[in-house]
View (cartoon, rainbow, N blue to C red):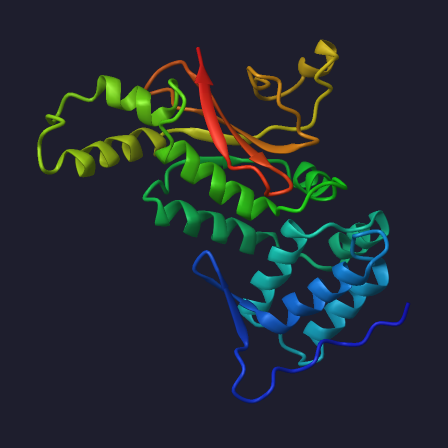
Length: 255
């Protein structure tokens, strides 16, 4: 199928789209959204990713915003097998994703938190047929949930609240001091993306770098992040992010 390059924004129209405080090339994202909406396989084809690359290289200069946009596309949209191989062989832009992850952590005041994932696994999970949520969006939801959720008994917030004694709950600045204490623990913590596994086959769990969720949620249906805060306790925490975006994110822990 022949593809046409994305049209330039008319005069007076915005050139950028703001996502989580970051600027991205609006025309490129609209081009990708058009491809996805008209694709029979609900994934970018090799021809389409080549058209995206051509739209970038037409100016003979790739700007920082365009690089960030390319990395955002690779992390947040589904690719066919051939499209993914062509993209990964021809576009080397991994440093931009790491910078945006650092920016996300900094906004939550947890720059020391280690975010651990395998790039190949990230791509495989992005391409799961039912997936409608990109890695970066899922990571943002997971981090927010783990820092602020108190619905389940054993969340990081509830565990920190139990051991926090530096201020009275009645003090005017209690909330701020509690938040700073939670951030302190997160700054020495580790948050990893759980690889896929067969929930019905314990042998498939043995080589995983993290524990599977206590409630046996599946990677096929969710982005699953695993948090360890060794300075706080020996709990393992899971953040469960529905791939369709239809269910609210939630997290819980176990020790």
